[in-house]
Image 1 (cartoon, rainbow, N blue to C red):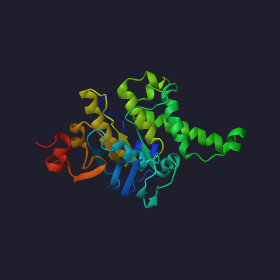
Image 2: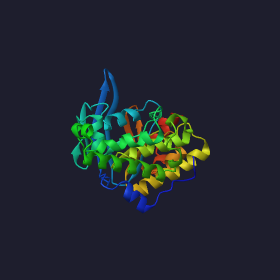
Image 3: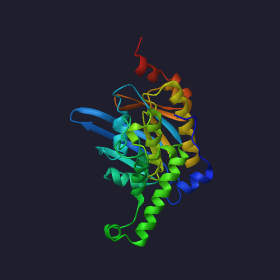
Image 4: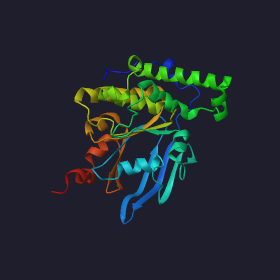
Length: 275
């Protein structure tokens, strides 16, 4: 993984032009989710302002990924409210939520391994296309122009993430760190307002984690998206996140700055147990 990404403000502005990527607040209020008799998430609350960089942490099995699945429409809450820019996301399909402006990556990388690096990003760009099936079949002028714009946008994103030289390679053949960058580039291709990162540092060596921290900061600062990340590496979390929410057995037990979280007795007990 390279030491950074070749982002400039003009590049980012051009890449995201017309994507609706201006920040909007994500609000989660009183969300509950049970599976049979198991209460997976209880009274989950979160307020993620525009262009914020927050963390969601907790011991294994605390319900963090379940929360991400609730936010992205994989699961529907039993009760509670989730809004993005004041619009409710409850009941929307994952594709509709992505179109609204919420994108995610996964702990286990889910690229289309058999497709090229370029094709992975180009497919994500298609989320915001407007041409019809008839236009595709008839190859209308509007459809050809939109396809050309998608190709240009995909190439620009790969240039921004230093992946342009590998655009024709199969995604599965990229080194691990480059696959992580490609997954973030693909998520940004959808023009999100909020980006959810699920264990982005999983499996990385110390140098890759250092590069990742720089990458995440640049993505937030340059693209203007809000970022909520799940991460087990406390060094990454404490270095990056402005505020952190802590879950334990599906229940939020603390919320605050990294310094406040490090000193919180409930958090210490959740991770280390009582004496």
